[in-house]
Length: 384
Image 1 (tube, one colour):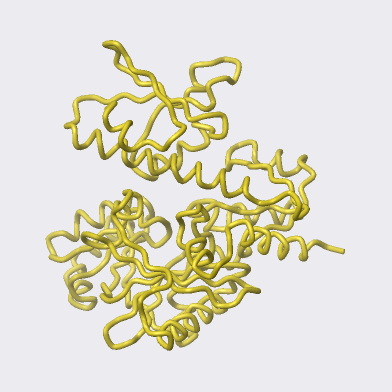
Image 2 (spheres, helix red, strand yellow; image 1 turned 30 degrees about the vertical axis):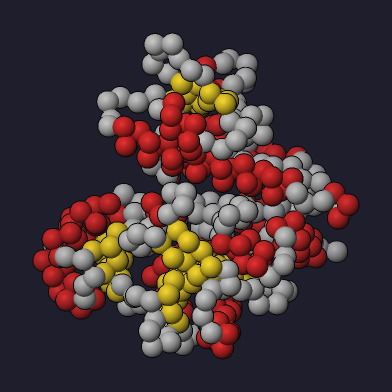
C-alpha cells in the first residue's frame, strides 16, 4: 500500500507509516473534507473511513483512515489509484475556484452537497450559486430545485431541463423529434423482468438492437453501471450491474467512430471539440478515472467543416432539451460522417482536467474566465 501511495497520490497529501499496525492515516490538508468527499469515492468504487468519525469535537475532517483485508497487490494498487483520482479532482476544483480573481467582484465560498447545504444557502447572503456538481444532485436537477425554491440565482440548467436530460430515454425521444440522430435503445425495467416475464423477450431485444450493444442505467452519470455486451451470454451480468444504479436500464446500439465531447456555453463563440482516445478498450468508468488511460485531443483531429457540423448538432441538442448556460454533448462521429448524440450532460465536470474546461482552454479561455462568465449570467437573472 505504501508504495502505491508514493506513486499515485497527489503532491501535498501526507500519510503515516505504521510500524506493524493495520491502518494508514491520510492527511488531505485543510482544503479538503474527507466526509464530504466520501460519496465521490464510493462512486469510484473505493471507500475509506472519514477521520471526523474518531473525534467528538469535529476535528479530523481533513483526515481519512485506510485499511485492506487480503486482496492481491494489484487490487490494492487499483484502489489507491481510484482514490488518488478522486482526491486529485477535488484539489483541482479547489484550485480552480480559488483562481477566480477577487478583482472581478466575487468572493468564493465552497459548500458541499450535504445536510447543511440548505441552511448554508439560506443564511449565507450569497449573490449567486456556482454549481459544480455532476451526476446525482447536480445533473438530475435536485440542487437546481432547491436553489429555485430559495430564490437564489445559479449557474447552469433549470430543474426541468436537467431532469429531462438526466433521463436518457426521455431525452432520446425529445432529441429524435428535433431531428437529431440518436442510437436506438430498448428500455428494460427491473419490475418487468421480475413480475411480468420480460426475460423471455430479451433475445428478441438483442436481435433488434444487434451486437455489440451497450447496457446502461437510464439515469446516472460518469459511466457508472455501463457495460459493453459483445456476446448474448454477457447480458445477464451487465443487466445486474446496471440495475444497481437504476431500476430501468437501456439496451442501446453500440456506435463506433470518433468519440467527441462537444461543449456548448451560452454567450461564447464555438468551443473546440475534444476528441477522446482510450488507450485500451472503450471510454468506460475505469478509463475515465484511471490516470493516463485516455489520450485527449483539443481541438479534435477532424476536418474543420465536420467539427462545425458537429457543433451545430450539439447546439441543437442543447436547445431541444432547454439547457441553459452550459452543457456537454457526448457524441460519436461515425465513418459515414454522421454525428450521433449519445447523451447531453447539464452538469459536466468542472475540474481543470475535465472536458469542458479542456475545450475552453484550447480556445484560450481560462477556467477563471469561464467561471466569471457563467456567474455573470446567473447574476443577470436576479430579480430587479
